[in-house]
Image 1: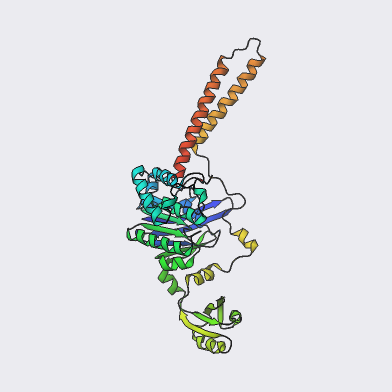
Image 2 (image 1 turned 180 degrees about the horizontal axis):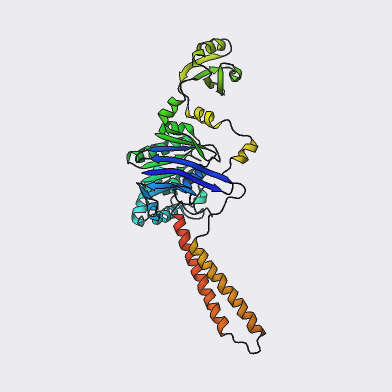
Length: 387
């Protein structure tokens, strides 16, 4: 379905995505993982042709991306992409129309999904009146209402409480059964661990780990212990038998230097902790994530891994807009020159300047029209901004 090879995107001196490759089949749930600033969102926007890659290839069913393919794709951006002053049902119908869905079909489907998400009675409320979690539900409805073949979700669980996370999980599993290819980016490792077939972990723009979830876990062996206890387990972090320890209030996941030393460690816990569980397990995805990426960076390192320094770079101006803008500027400059010449003339004639005023008006109308057409095309790739 989706194949990405050697994708690269750089902003000035910062490489946001560097040599990323992945392949997603129909009926597959694919996890795109990475710490903040790793390049996940840039990768997604590049795959969707919202921003152009510097190099690499992106194909859908073996074909290069074309604007017509937008109608086959559902996209949930990480940022809110809804018009806050609009009514919920009108918002859904508007975005459905951009995907070529008739109003009659869209309305029936919208009510079905609103009912599924517990929002049917809110159809005529304004978007801004909803909580963050409920706004996320509306965005989810918009991304799946047109029955996409490929669904790309950037932090889909953001703002959802545990009950609605389960509901979203059920919906994604249903879509998977319908042979939809699903890519989602998230920080919630437990969701990826429960749902995904394959993963790609990127850090500082580069892929550092990829493959099936089962193979990834096997690759990191079984040097992990999971213990549940009563007491203070902080001393586990300093044990020479422990390579790495994630210690919580009454739970710890330990990576041992040598799994054969597990009995020795168990004996050292006697008298220090009241154990409820002590088991050798495969490392969790969260543990693998931390092991590969490293501990949370300090403030200086955070700056180093940002996708782009300073202000977020603006996308290049569309060529059609540039053309109309140049025409408008040219007309204004000529008119200004003729106006000055006529002021200085002994017997000024205002016929030609008047014609240029008409020309300027026409240029303004054309510029606005082209700008709106381009904006409408761009909305197909992920929705408009919040007002």
